Image (cartoon, rainbow, N blue to C red; front, side, top):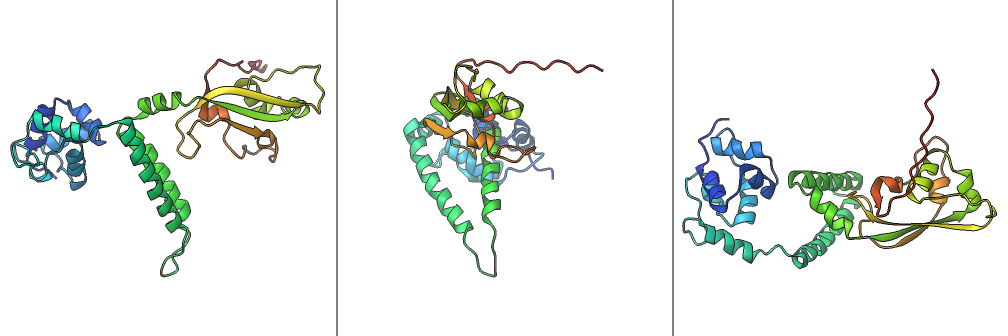
Amino acid sequence: MKTKPNRAIKTLRTIIGRTQGQFAAMIGTTRDAVASWECGRNRLSDKFAMRIYASTGAMTEELIRSLGMPRSKLGTPYSKTDFDWWRKLNEQSTDLAIEQARGAASTLEVLLLAAARPGAGRITDRLPAVWMSFLEWCEQTCQDFRLRGQIDEVLAKRKFKDRVTMTWGEARQHQSGAEGRILRGYYGFKDDKRKLDNEELTLEVETCPSWHPASDMTGRDRTEKGGWLFDRPTEQKPRRSAPAKHFHPVQPTAKPAKRKAARR
């Protein structure tokens, strides 16, 4: 529905020195959405008015009513000084992010525990969908706020040793298919004919986690038995995703040999 142009948003954006695209990334929306508010094609919602307030300190009333000059918390016309003060007050430090993450973990735990309990009126079986909605929120937030590059920077610093143990015989038996690609391409396995089948083999790679909300992204060293690769029914996917999909080796590893093209 056509509304009047929102001059307050454009004025605010000009004051803080942000393009439509930069302003959109700041509050988790698209450049087109910001343009639609400014030209009056769409009305600013209460949800995004609150996000603008959280990011800038500009009061929501003037933004929602599309008034020309946004207001500060003191009721004065909004200025660059107000924005600088607000940013200093809400300094985006690593310590603050860690503190908020701990609070969020506690909140998520309560939500999941509540979803696991039956509700009034025989309401049950909510936990799987609640968990899925959380994973969807993670992916959508990453996209809306354009965080992927910064996420990769954070995860790249969480290097750890990923080890898997098995026997040489187990490794030799699974050199083809998906398991073989993981052993060679990810762990860098190379057969040694001098080793007996019953001798223990430990493969290790230095790596870092990649963005995957359902996985452990803490970067702690780990050692696992090779059974998770091999103990599975034929023609079914592994019980857990292949490491190569979620972790990137820091050092280059040998690539799987190329298959010869089939003759026609």
